[in-house]
Image (cartoon, rainbow, N blue to C red):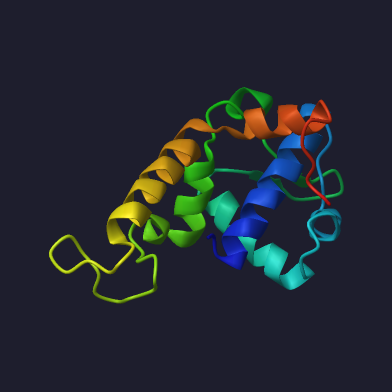
Length: 144
């Protein structure tokens, strides 16, 4: 459903959110290891997230990545998806056709449209705080 970059971006943001609620800044190598992503790829994703003000990057010996706790409720999954994949997830054809629309729909167009609308709603109403809270409570897990 999501691109690999977007999957890793969500995982990285959730991991940073968890550590931020504990008052811990995390480094690139820790993030890459925790989300099972190559370090160079993770660095590019973190750069995108920082550029879009989703995460904060601090340089120096006490630096690292963090998200201020007062922002965790305001950062929705849709912000991460939009920063990494733009709005392509809301427009793509369920069968991968280049020219699928209301006037010339593929066989799954109308069913997939409903799924995309539900996905958009979920992404727009789910915050990093929601996800990090569930992980901290042991309800969900970031790693299998």
